[in-house]
Image (tube, rainbow, N blue to C red):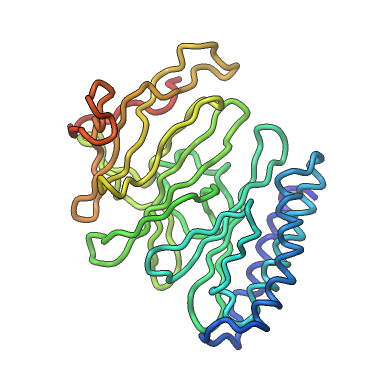
Length: 305
C-alpha cells in the first residue's frame, strides 16, 4: 500500500467514528470489561506485529488492522475507563485532569524511515476521537510551526504536563520521541491547546532570550546516544541534556550531537517556558540536587550546515 492510500485509510478508519452515540459514564461493568478485553487480545498481537515483524509489508498490515480494531474497542461503553494494560508497544498518556488521552505509536517503514499514528480520545459521554495525521515530512522547521490534528508532527509521546496559559486556559506540554533517520533521533517538546474544542499543536510559548519565541523545542542527537528531555517534578521545570558536536566518527550526513554532561531547561513564567542556560552543572557537588540556573542565549542543539 503506498503512502497516500495508507494515509487515506488511517483518516477514514478513525474519522468515520468521530462522533458515536450511546456512551454514558457509569463504572466499567464486568460485561464491558470482558467485551473490551476480547478486542485487546487481538490488539496486543497486532501491536507486537507493528513493532517486531521483519518484513515492512507485515508491519504495515498489522498497523492497518490495528486501527479499526482499536476503534471497535473504543466504541464500547465506558471504554475511556479501560487502560489497555496489554498494549505495551502503544503509548497512552493522560493529563492530570483526565479530560482526554492520547494514543500514539511508531511504524518503521524502512531502516531510518518512520511513520507515526495517533488519536485523541475525549473523556465525555459520547465517544469522540480525533485522528492525528503525521505530516512531519512536510514541515520545514518544526520549531516555528503550529497546526491542527490534520498536520501533526508525529511522535510517540512519553509524558504530558498541564500548565496555565497566559489567557488563563490550560495548556499541555507534550514530550515525544521521533526515530527521525538512520543516524539521528529526535526528542520533541510540544504544546497542545484547544481552540473551540479542537486540538492545536505548537504555539509561541518557548522563549529563547534575545532569539525570540519558538513554537516547539527539538533536540536532535546521535542514534547511539541517550538524552534526557523531560519535566522534573522535584525542580518544577523542564530539564534537558545540553548537546555538543559528537567528537567521534561523523555520519555520512555530517556532524551529530551527543550529551556533554551538563543540563539546560525551561521554567514556566506567566504561561511562557523560558530557556535556562545552566541547570545542574556537571561540576556541582551533587549533580541532581545542588544547582543554579542562569538565563541566557540558547545553545545549538542540532548540527550546523
